[in-house]
Image 1 (spheres, one colour):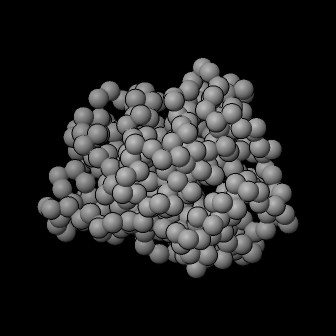
Image 2 (cartoon, helix red, strand yellow):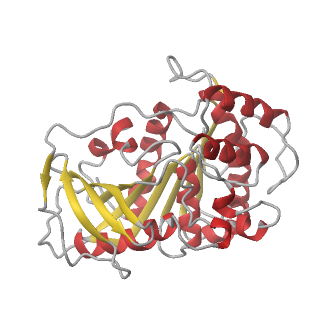
Length: 361
C-alpha cells in the first residue's frame, strides 16, 4: 500500500513512544531470537561478486585534478563495462583507500561542459558496495536517465557516521567521506552537479535519512527501504548491537552509550529530527514480516529481520506527514528483509527519484 495523502491502515497496532529506552518487549525478543539464529541482522548475505564481463584496467577516467579539499583523490579505476567502473579513492577521512562504483549516463563525456544529477545508493550491513548492481537491475533501469549513479562502500558495520571512538579522533569517518570528499571528487572529475538524491536499504536507509537531514540543502530526495529510522527503538538498537557483534565491531565506538551519550544518539537519529527533512522528498518502505510474494526460497528468518522496522517506519511516516514534510510510504503486512523486495522498492521509488532530480527517462 503506497501512502501519500492518507495515513497507513495496515496492522492497526498502537504507535510506540519515540526514542523509547525501555527493556525489549515481546516483539523485540522475537526478533532477537530470529537474529541470533540467523547469525545476522539487517542483512541478506551477499552472493557472487559482480565484476562485469568486459572488465579491464584503465586510467581513462582518472582525473589528477579531481581532488577533494582535504586531498582525497582517485588512485585507480577498473572499468566493468561501457558505463560502469569501480573507483579506488584515497581518503584522509577514512585513513586509507575506499572502493566506489559509478554508473555513468549515456550522455556523459569527460570533455562535456554539462553536469549531471547524482543518485547515491547505500548498502546494508554485512555487505559491500557491489550489492546494488549485483542484486538489482539498477543499471538497466537507469539506462535512459541522464544522471550519475554512485554506490560507495559503507563498511560491513559502518552505520554511516563518523565514529565517536570514545571521544578520540581517528575514524572511520564515513559521513565525511560520503558527504564531503566523494561529492567534491565527482563534481570536479565526473561532471556531477549539485542536485543529489540518496536511497538506502536497512542500515543504508539510516544513512540516507541522516545524510539528508544533517546536511540541509544538499539532497533533494531520501529513500529508506526497510531502514533503521529510529536508533533508540529497543528492537532496532538490539539489531545494531547484533550487527556489530557479528562484524566484531565495538558498538560503543559508533555513538557511545545511549544513556550517557544521549545527545550524540539523538543527533544521529532520524526519528528525533523530523524538521531536518523539510524540503526533502522522503520515501519510506517497510513490511510487517508476514510471508509475501517473493519469500519462496528466502531465508526463513528474513521475516523476523523485517518485522522490527515496520512500526518505527509507520510512526516516522505519520510524524513526517503531520509536520507537512513531503513523504510517501509503502507499508505492507507481508514481505521480508530480502533483495526481491528492495528491487521492487527501487522501481516503486524510481519516479519520485527522477522527479526530485528533475531527470526525464
